Length: 167
Figure 1 (tube, rainbow, N blue to C red):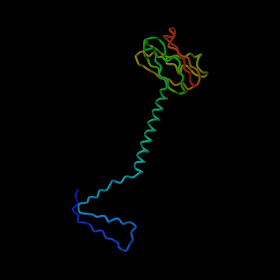
Figure 2 (tube, rainbow, N blue to C red):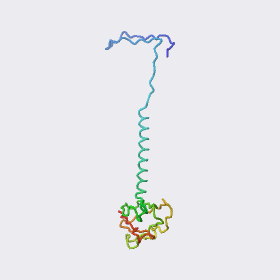
Figure 3 (cartoon, one colour):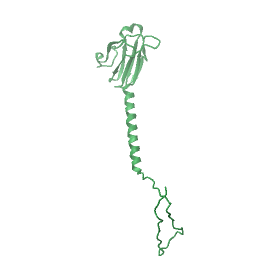
């Protein structure tokens, strides 16, 4: 883009001594001067800080979601074998255990009142209702550390039993 402005005269100061012997800059009427946009360093720092906070929040949410759904137990094997898969699990106190109906249903989860930590009321953690549909699920949270033994009422005689260790 050409400028239509007249040539600019740059005054010289002959009374001042200069360390440099460079020739003065010449400016002509067809010289175009473009200014680069000014970018504040703090603006990019603010943006990075915001992105960093968002990443921390997202990873925290994932961690909470992962710990909230610590273990999934299939009720019935993929090949139709009766059992809990896995049948022995370990979780931290308060972590969620999700039981998912897979094959050979109906299934339920009943805790043996003689095989739970002292003070635990099995009627509060049992899931005696039958899961009758594929992928039907329910979750429990065990807060008292210790060993819990459970079984499926309709298939206990076939060996459908399991154990949860809570730390």
